[in-house]
Length: 191
Image (cartoon, rainbow, N blue to C red; front, top):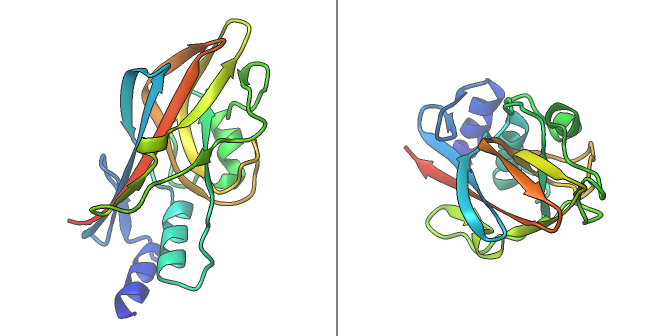
């Protein structure tokens, strides 16, 4: 329990830093994740993420504190040419990222697709075995510049927790009828 309190205190005191691999808490615990995505099952691309302050606090509060576990997470895609920042939250994700929310110039689902992870193995949990699919609907094309992991399924929603976000190294251009598949995995390790 002492370690739990110490880790929580490190985050509350800002004793963490962003690295190319993830977030390092008190120079010893690395939290990192990556998004894996493809169009119609081809052209696989992987991009590392940012776990924002809100996501870190949620992980610690649920795992080591008294907060209730978030039992459902959802994936969102965005079109903005913007790099996620540590101060992004579920409340400002849509506005900051230009989340794709249209059912006619975006994807056909009424809600964000569920992130359905498998079991934890070797400090990693993810949905790479059952990636979420965005069924694209548009008149010409849609640009997908990045993605996020949120605790609410409402497209454009402003409640809940933002667990992760990334800007893709290369914007993905999708066309009507395409299936954009998105996987996310997170890993915690001692450095």
